Image 1: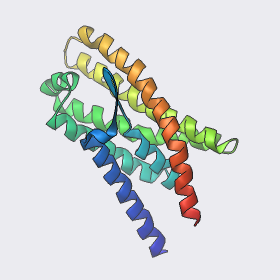
Image 2 (image 1 turned 30 degrees about the horizontal axis):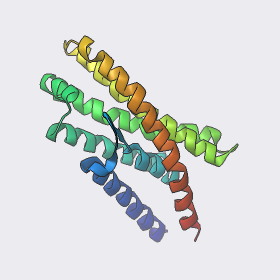
Image 3 (image 1 turned 90 degrees about the vertical axis):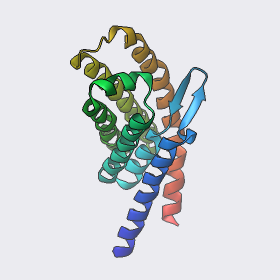
Length: 190
């Protein structure tokens, strides 16, 4: 039993390392002209579907902490404005949505996996990715308002990011998660 626990721990550590690598290097971004599509949800979703929702929460936390550290080091213009008003709001905005990613992905996967495994993985990937986008940007907007920052000038930017980047990220997650998870499962059987 200890051998399996060690293997699970090492695999979890590898997923966390991958999240950190993608989060702090350009490898985690797919440039599409005027926007960058992040694929940081992919290791969280794949790890969750491969190792369970409890390990997924650890991966979601790693994603959230990586995002918060990035916001401290090199915030975007939208995040910098909020950071000046409330670093605590930025921490919540960075971490809470990423903790919800594995829960939504696992929930969707659990509901659909009996019918069609590949479809369940793809839908779970889309659900996890959209959970991240909607909650992150939604909390950003909410925290702008709570902190008395005029949200009107950034409303279009947040909406456009949600629509364009969010949909691209969801598609990328669906495309990437299914074959990666299938490959991991084949390796596990061997």
